[in-house]
Image 1 (cartoon, rainbow, N blue to C red):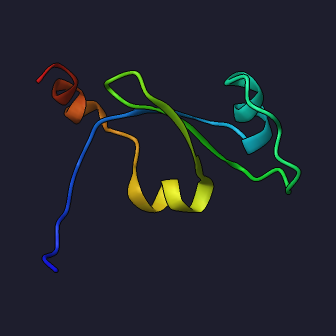
Image 2: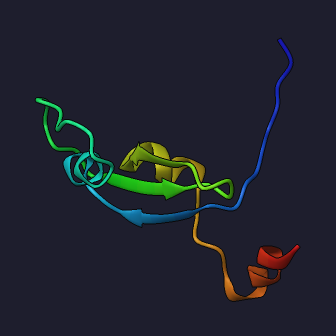
Length: 71
């Protein structure tokens, strides 16, 4: 297999799993309520990511990078 790296600009906010499920009209899972992030992609798709996974993949953009939002 080949190795790839990708980048995307997303919007996100801290949100636990149960709150995300409720906000999307989904049934609340029976498992533990885990800390994570509600993620919105440029195409309008919404998902949820566990905190550790999200923070390993993303960082908040800096003021000097804001021009990327209009590219």
